Length: 204
Image (cartoon, rainbow, N blue to C red; front, side):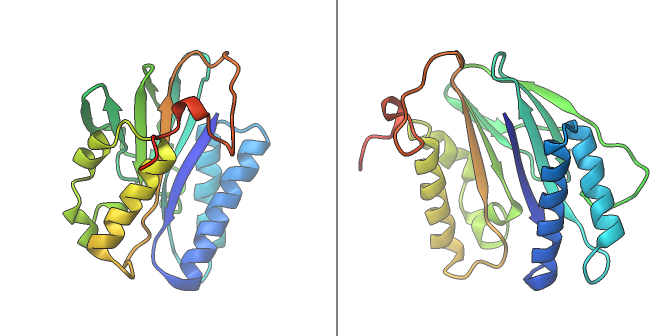
């Protein structure tokens, strides 16, 4: 399974074009069979060679999860570190430092691997979930408190919390992506509206 989260610098049309160029390059390279490192290199060159309106960059995190083993290969391109919830503990995962996409042409990216355990939850965020007014939310503690909820519910609750303390108009993009690893991927899934009822949150 492939996953990614990106965040283009700035605001307005130039930022939107940067994000579109970055995501389009990542997607095209992935669909052509490119590795995570090839995806990162392609996005970097796309922004360097075609920057809309002048020099620009985007941070990002790319992942490829082996659904049989729970091994997650990761490239972190200048992005905030993810949070890992394992058992009763939650904390940030320190990853090798790579430059953002669109910065420096001939410097290779580094890949690392995380070995997920059944029951682990990985939370990836953009800096809008962490900085300025959003810094008032203790994200690590809140993620731990919400560990019993389905990932989609956690996204909704955390987004509402950030809006409450930093909104109603946010000064920066605030986005998060949550990956739960349950193990035993070979089991048949029974889903409704994209979610497995047995793992859905209790209504509240």
